[in-house]
Length: 283
Image (cartoon, rainbow, N blue to C red; front, side, top):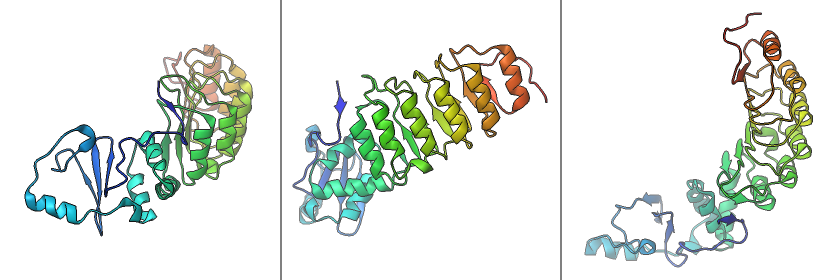
């Protein structure tokens, strides 16, 4: 089981004593005036994988001469490197190396527009702390991990109070069963730029849906998969208050044909998935 916490991760796989950073089978090399990313065929030694690549004597001598300690690399250069990392786990490892690397990760997070915790068993403190630092974040995915979710309303409160929350255009809470109406309502009140929202597989009720209708006027796509506690009244409120809404996933919900026909008359562009209407309804 991989339980992910931001402040307590191993630094294995990171070579702090040389100028090379070994992360996820790649070699990231810092040169005096540029940053180069080397793949597995670059000809450099990969100590972490117990592999040796053939290089010429001249290349090896040049490599030794240009080695520098990563402790002397400017924070903005480290931030540029860390910005290229797509794995949250790699970022967490890098943050645990030293204070300078941690500052570099923080600067990289400040420029990140997408952040995904999908597949990781992150907790409220981990998610909240990272989102607080990602001031330019636009898309956030904290979907259910393979070992279950530990996100609760507390984590949603952290997100709602972050600087980036009013600018978020996409949020996924897919399968996060630890959240309730309280946390979702607080989140959508602050995330007023939402265009895509996924709360499928949660136990929210009409309380959350009415809050979405009141505050998410830019919403285009909503996933309510399996939200059996949401009624037709909530769906009608969404259609009435969210003019840009084009798709609602209502799989597993009890939505009648009569209600769907009513929605089609209110908003001809709105489609329920799955739909019971065979022929389009014109106003």
